[in-house]
Length: 405
Image (cartoon, rainbow, N blue to C red; front, side):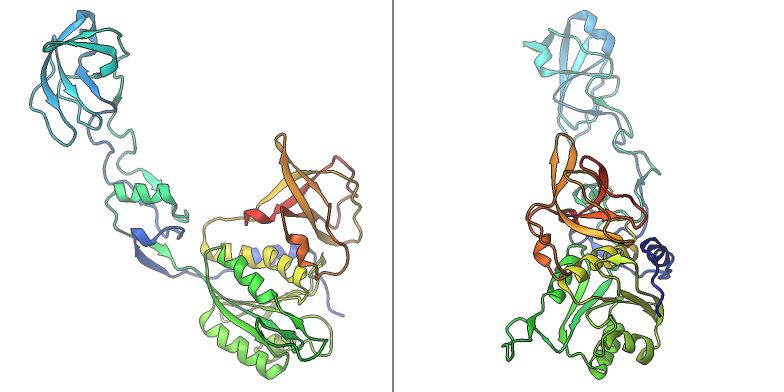
């Protein structure tokens, strides 16, 4: 009889996979949004490189505020270098972003003075160095500004542009090939010819899930449940994809051929086949030529939960961005016993109230692992470890926030 491992053991196996050196590419900055940085970004200069004005006003010597009235000797627009110097009793009108003139150490704002002819009268004094940006205030030369593995967002784009970096090296996003297997399932648009046929949603659900993780996808659609078709499918996918995902054909039925093809036709290294979880206990994950094959159960809810639990973490690992599943603590609104000695993932509703997450099960249907509608609205997965105790109303428990994937 096949040995089932526990959920924690299965995660440990996957966490220890070494995918080797990942390929990189250079992208123009305008195309780098949401990509993963392949190298540290290090400042090659100070920003600002010189003391700079932080607002419109008058560059002065701090101690000259005691004089109450100063002569305006020049103007200092941004983008120019003024030759005049600030000395005793004089000031230079200076604008936001302008270099602070030589001799000045403080910027007194326009609203703090009254202009009388060619002088300013100081109505309100300021502290020394007020509105003056120090050298390196933004960043200093040789400072690591963005670390390798960071996801490039709008702020990263701005910092890279300020460093005059027009092209940036990023990791090439992994490619995931997806297919549903089963002679009884129909793809979109196919006509039902007998009542036993059902419409497949798995391959499209999983494609949508992994696209949110910003990876490349190859949609293979629905494949007949026979060894030849499945063998051809997997061999073709392994030529171009980093991860191949199938749904169906991993249980113990006479027509569950996916597991046979993986083990016999491909001679892949099976990392595990069977985990003590609900749903998805028959999940199979194997490795072939440095590529990963994730064979999920056929029921819609089961395959989707397993894709969240196993496929997404492997995508995160390949992307190298340090991403993790959004697991948080939530307070449960009713008693909820542990129904069996497995790690159980139960669909629930989640809301955020008075500083904490609250979960309930209103409208959630009980039955088989096929009820994908349980993931609609504001869904989460309640996680009950196989060794945990029954949950009582008001207890805190771990949940996985599905809408934050």
